[in-house]
Structure formats: C-alpha cells, structure tokens
Image (cartoon, rainbow, N blue to C red; front, side, top):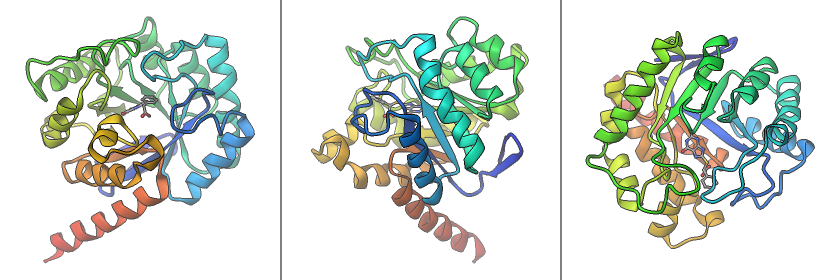
Length: 279
Ligand code: 7PM
C-alpha cells in the first residue's frame, strides 16, 4: 500500500508517524507552549529530526467543550505555520480542519493531507475536497465535540464505525474524490467510552475490509489515562504500547504527540515483522 502526498510517496509497508502540531492556545496537553508560529516551527523541526513523516497542523481544538474558533482565527493560527513548514522543512504537511476555506488555503500553501474529524460532513467540505488533490483522512465521530462524551452508545462495534466510514468513502467517491486519496480512522475518544475504545482497538483488523490505509490517534487519550492512572503528560509508555498494538492490527499511520519514542518502537516492530517474513 502506498500514499501519495504531493511529490512524496509514502510506502506504507513500513508504519509511519504523524506528529501533532497544535497551534491552539487551549490544547490540553501542550499547555499552550507552542502558540506562536515561530515556536510551532521549532516544534515541527524537532519532530522532523525525530523521524516524523507528516506534521499535523491544527488550529481548532476538538477537546470536548472547547470554544469553536472563527474562520479568521483558524486561518491566522495555521497559515503562518503551514507556510513556514512548507518553506523550511521536508515533512509532509497535514491540516487538521473541518472548514472548507481552511482546507483550500492550506492545500494552496503546501498541505498535502487534510485531516478532518468531521469526515467532510461540514457544509461545502466535500465539494472543496473534490477541487484539490490532497489526501483526506476520514475519521469517525459520534455526536459533536461539545456533547460526544455524554452518553456514547453503539449497537455493534466495530460494525457501526465501519458502516459510517463505508458511507463516507462512498460519499467521497460519488463526489469525484478517488479512493487513492482516502484514509480511514476509527476516531478513538470521539464519542467513545473506555470499553468502546478498547473494543475498537481489539478489532482494528476488521477495518482492513475497507481496503484503505488506517490512521489512528491514541496519544495521551483518556482511556490510556484511566488504564495507567496517569495525567496527560505521563502517558508516553501507554501511548507507545497502544501504537504498537494498533500497527500490529493493521494501522499504517500513527498520530502522536511523542514522535521520537513512537518512531523507535515502530522501527523495532517493523524489523521483527521483516525478519519473520524472511524465514
Ligand atoms: C482534546 C481532546 C484535545 C482530544 C485533542 C484531542 C484525532 C485527530 C484528534 C484522531 C485524527 C487528540 C484529540 N484526535 N485526528 N485529532 N485521529 N485523524 O488527542 O484520533 O489529539 S484531537
């Protein structure tokens, strides 16, 4: 499996790492340490050195109950960072947004992946995506960020989530977006309790039926906090374990705050997989 990101082709035979670059002042685990574009660029540079293949630039916090951000505010936050990374670094740029105007501006400035937690369900988003040729990550979310953790409920897991993604993939292809541009993501923590998240991780292999690259984000999430009894900044080992489990079940891209240890863990994993295939 391969993913084209602009002039780059990511061979997904080896698992890849997407580093989280928050430019929101209210990000729950970075505590606003990277608010200015300059600081965000330093962070992106560090993630590139640490082995990230992609940096995910986000200007709107999807934290439950977080304030919605205006279009202008989001553009002001993400555009200088995208422009700076495109000019100075050699990593693929993902833009974490649900707004069609931000998608368009970001892609024009060099983003080659759109990471949309609303899976192009916002007004005008699917039409915008049909106009450019960046890749798109379609993520499952039950409810909306404001209310999704109130009482998440499913008839079947992972079936309900796979059905949703199947419908979004069909909507994309109907809108003229080729499958070669699509990735899918179960959306850990987005309208899911701990049991839901664990059932999805345990059965992640079933997402392979979609025939598209699987991206996962488990880094520092609450289920890992509950399992380890640790605060967000102390969930590194739990997050790396979860990443390794996800990749062992077919995930190809891991979205994480902790690039260096995740890259190391996935190198070990990949080497062992290759050794197993050679004998
Ligand atoms: C507060 C709560 C702040 C949750 C940030 C988050 C994913 C994502 C996020 C994911 C994809 C976080 C999340 N999670 N995009 N964006 N997949 N594709 O922990 O799991 O980063 S935001």
